[in-house]
Amino acid sequence: MSEHAYSAEERAALYRTIAERRDMRHFSGGEVAPELLARLLEAAHQAPSVGLMQPWRFIRIPRPELREAIHGLVEEERVKTAEALGERSDDFMKLKVEGVRDCAELLVAALMDGREAHVFGRRTLPQMDLASLSCAIQNLWLAARAEGLGMGWVSLFDPAALGELLGLPEGSEAVAVLCLGPVREFYPAPMLALEGWRQPRPLADLLYENHWGEHP
Image (cartoon, rainbow, N blue to C red):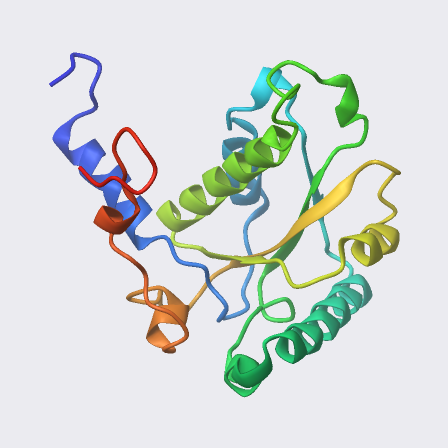
């Protein structure tokens, strides 16, 4: 055991938080205290980023009419996604895919403009800005679960339409609509698994050694 390791209790809490994090769709209203929201966003802001570029921008949406407009964009894309799914369209339409109207707090996570100026770590992998934002979202997700709050990542929207709605500058991009707030209970397993949409695969199927497709 490394001398820098946390205590057994602290490690157990960390691994429990990771294991019990869920992509939540069902919220129970309520509110998130300002000091708690600030703490969660600070956790997101502590994420690693390529070249320390910190490409994340978070937009809080307290206006009801703006939240309703975002819900409309999500619903529009939900229908288009169902059409694209063909024979699984009916099953998809039965799923609850967002909690935009029900959650206590609604946030939009976006990539900043001017990202082309950041070359460090992105010359051959420009998508690392998105990876950095994803780390920030995961930080927020895990911190929310530790605080007993649910969070859901909604990706059903047209980024250009959402960007126009929120006045994003040219070169920036909306990546996630984040639903955050109290829930009555956390799903005991991923919701899509519980609904029979798809079952998660074990790590052994996804772990290779030396070359692609070679299992340990």
